[in-house]
Length: 426
Image 1 (tube, rainbow, N blue to C red):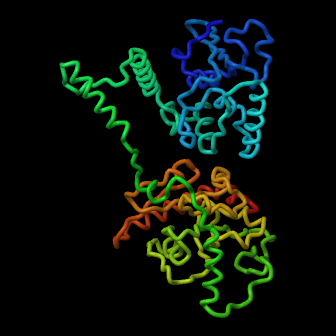
Image 2 (cartoon, one colour):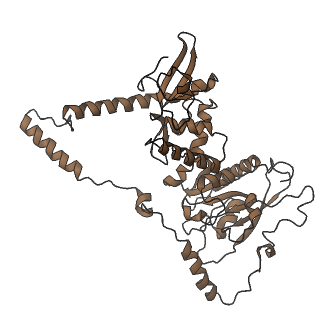
Image 3 (cartoon, rainbow, N blue to C red):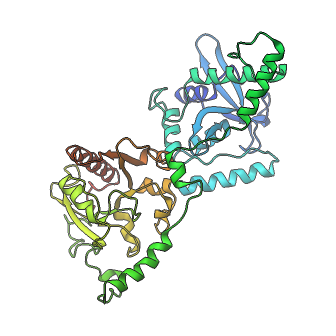
């Protein structure tokens, strides 16, 4: 059995090729297993993944790669390369739901501890898991992944690591290529001076890190307390409905059980004051295709309705319900949520049925609307393809708003169709 060195074989390429040849790789306790006992082992006990490939020139090849070897798959949420064991475990659970996958990761990590192994299986979010499984299955090109680094970049990174290791071994921790000094004493003084400068450098953040900080703050309690004071300022208010089912705006149609009648889809807005789209201006944006600044002095309504024809869903106009809080939701209303507008602040999902963004945007389309030219928050980027990112122009020129609105509705229609809204009974 031929065992490849980690530097001469790429595990992701071998994995993709083995799936293409329908020759599943096998976990093993040995890099050169010669008995069936080496192969009949659990994933926690195994130390190597053996690839059994067929080659027209070399015949059958058996290549063993350590499970601890990093791959070219770079997790943006973890900010590092994912090891081979995590990649293999993700492929084994490619058909598992989000909660089932998380539970399986936790169980395997417990087994690794019992096996006295220091490594842990990484829990990939929905977008990363989908991208990895699609790439391994060969459904996309080898260069069409958002998370997998190209082989050329991988080789360059290895060369840089080798150069750094050789420099450290030789005792030269700083190489002054641009010093331009021939005198050894003057060169040494210049190296010491630059080392002091580099040690005193302070890493600067961008606009998002300066404004948001490193710790996410939850201001949800401020909204609840302010509602009490604002309610008193407006004077006596009519008594609230005794139960959610008495709210006619959220109730399903009276004849919903009759054929041809569908429940009304729901769109959730962000209650954040930094959101560009809120209850006062969302209707003019989605219906008229024109963005107007929200009037902060207006109390507005906590529920709106609009109609839109989605040809792939229904030939008749659909009536959508727009709310900025799920406080009055019944459990069955969550199955009607088709889109969630977000600013990237996770406290928005505190009272949601799915508080994990990866799980939430697997059930509904996420929509982030920002200013054109500004940087999209890293949290939104980390949520992957489940969130649609669009940008609108600042100023008074609003002629491109309609194009943005049509992109939003097209994404909503595609997600609704994927969720089965175009089928009979929905």
